[in-house]
Image (cartoon, rainbow, N blue to C red; front, side):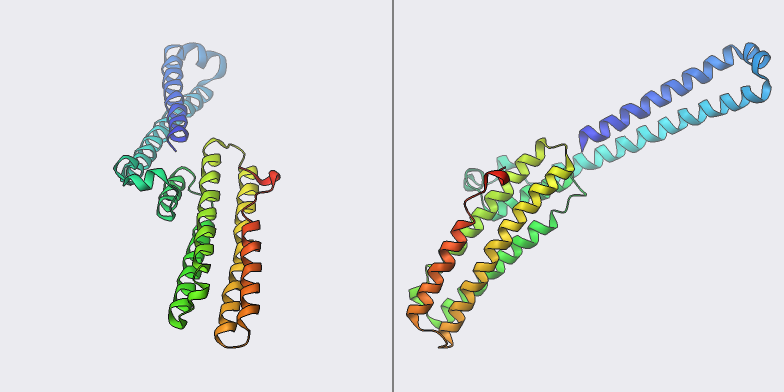
Amino acid sequence: MKNKWGKIITIGVIAFVVGIGLWMGAGIIRSDLVLNFGIVAYRILRGLLIVIAIGGAILTLYGMIREAQAEKRLRALPDAGNLPKEDTKAITPEGIRRAIAKAKILRPKFPFDRCLQQMDRMDDYQARLHTLLATNELEAFRYTEDILAESEMEMCGDIRAFLNYLIVLEDDAMAMERYEAMLARSEARFVYIQELLLTLADFVSENMSQGDAADKVRYCNEAIRETFVRDESLTF
């Protein structure tokens, strides 16, 4: 994070300047210091000041290197201005993944992998549903693909809202609380998505009538949509 490394560089420069300045000043009034505190104390003081100066120089160099590395990683990310128009006008899974990659640079210790795993899981559910419908020619249940597509867009919207919130957040504990709430909402959707897929599998295996399967799918659809309504305590 540029601001973070900028602060480290500033501290390093201050330490270096103060250390060198006091070291030189101690040399100028060497006689007075030796007379009042002794030669041993004088040498210890000068040694301590040069250590502070060297430490400041090292800290400054370290901050400059890390800041340059962060800027290099940011420049390596796709420029939003060069993206296709549809990527800048709408929330897409691909756009959200790029946004997460950029957020990871600013907050490298934050567990973004957990929401990426949920996105991968949603992709897997969609692929399984498509295969099940295509293999068994379940045209009557083709609309279930739209249900999962809506669920994916809702998940992406949640992540985008959280990432925007994270930009201005300073309280890590509060960020984690909201992050957990977002992940929990996706997990609730997954429960009903799994139930929906199992219902279709039971229908294909003739363990359920078409009427019962249709009723169960409608129930799952309604339950999934209920997760789209955010509780006021969890809004971002």
